[in-house]
Image (cartoon, rainbow, N blue to C red; front, side):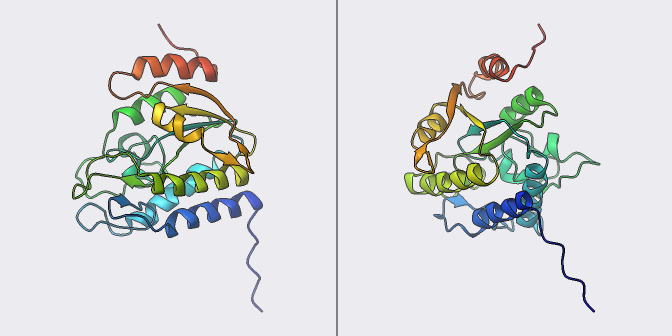
Length: 226
């Protein structure tokens, strides 16, 4: 007699629904669905599946998050190859970690923004990271580049984000990283009401690292060394 499968707990079930929604999104050619598509020139075999698993592990560890740090979109040196917002392979997928590299490049990718954010947050489990566009928009014909998402793709991303907040993080306070992300979040409605956007901080890129650290540390109660 077969044993019935153990039912998933509500939080884990919600994670699966979010990941399924990310995976099935139909996107323009200049936006890579990093949770569904493998580029044979850039990705290891099963890269998208590994990115889904990386995101699954990440979200499972953050069920008690009180803050949601929200950027614009994955960068090609960072979440494009990890599947986890504001991370890169060098810092997330080190030997012995539970996260897998997905790119064919010889050495793990490094991203400056990921380094700044990960170094600031450390092992905190009360801060989750996300992007208003959770897929990777790039310049046409150049998969290893970054571009702002078009309005349609951004709309898809905000729909996923509403679901993310409702299902996983209903009580979180949102902190926008950068002006573009902040502008998008001001348009976000959760159950018909404006999202709980409490602050905007400088993006770490283009000389903004120190200002980001100072602003984010103050909001999150993190002490900085002199």
